[in-house]
Structures are given as C-alpha cells and as structure tokens.
Length: 202
Image (cartoon, helix red, strand yellow):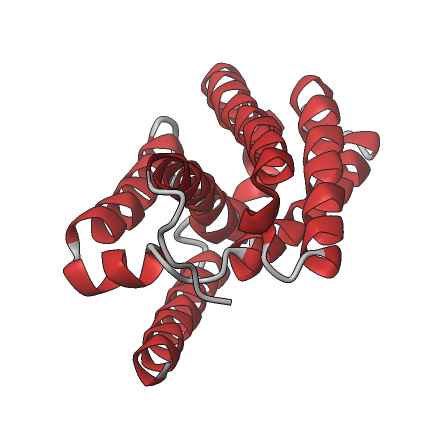
C-alpha cells in the first residue's frame, strides 16, 4: 500500500507539472504560432513519450499494471470539451465538418466515462463493459485526430481556435493523455485475459 500511494502521488505530481507547462505554452501563444504540420507532430510526439514512459520505465510500468483504472476512465470526462467544439462551430469559428462529429462523439464517450466512474469502484471488474467503452472511445479519438489533421492541413484557419489558450490544452494535454489511457486499458484487459488471477489494486 505505501508503494502504491507513493506511485500515485508521483503520477499526480507529474500530471500537475505537465498541465502547468501546457498552460504556459498555450497562454504564451507558442502553441498558436505553430503552423501545420507541427501541431500534429506535437500531438504525436507527446503521445509517444507517454506510451514509451509507461512501457519502458520499470517503476511506472509496475504501477500501471495494478492501479485502479477508475481515475483513468474519469479523466475522459474532460471530453465534454466537445460541447465547446459545437459552440465554436455554431459561431462559425471552427470547422463544422470536423466539430460536429468530433463534438458529439466526445460528448457520448465522456458521458460513458462519467457513468463508469460513478457506478463502478473497479471498472476492470466489468471487463466487457469497460472494453466496449474503450473501443468506442479509442475509435472516436482516432477519428478526431485524423480528421483534425486533414482539416488543419487543408484549411489551417478553420482549426485555429484549438491552438489558442485555453483550448490549446486539448492538443497539448487532453488528447495525448486520452490516447495513452485508452492504450493502457487495452493492455490491462489483455493482461487480465491472459492471467485472470493476476492481482488488481482497488
């Protein structure tokens, strides 16, 4: 238990530092100054760093292998940012072709995450439901990222609001962690299927 608490504390501290850096980068205008394809490169690089850290750092990997997934699912409540996509689209400030499917998709996934986090003390205990939500959520975020990249490359101005603070937190903080957490859930479900008796922490 002490090791788990220390691991959780270190993880939260790292998240806070990352969030602060993302806020500073957005508020300074540095994110908004990026021209395509650099925003897409940035998202990919941050996501890759997260995945590699989780896969290669022994202490982090051990912690991720047993930590309760409830907090990771709850993070996806941030995907209610889809409401902002719809509002900006209605104002003509954001590409409707991207914002409408991305906005509604994120809202649906966020609602599912909220229900799972509120109802289930240990989401992995209901692996079928967690797996279904994870597949839907991962498919949605892949579609969001791919269509955003295509739209941004074709018409950078139509996606510009996403790179101005505070919306800049979507590409610099929310999207990379969302993708990495979906991959974590896939990994944990695969491990549970392979070793059903493996201990899990509440």
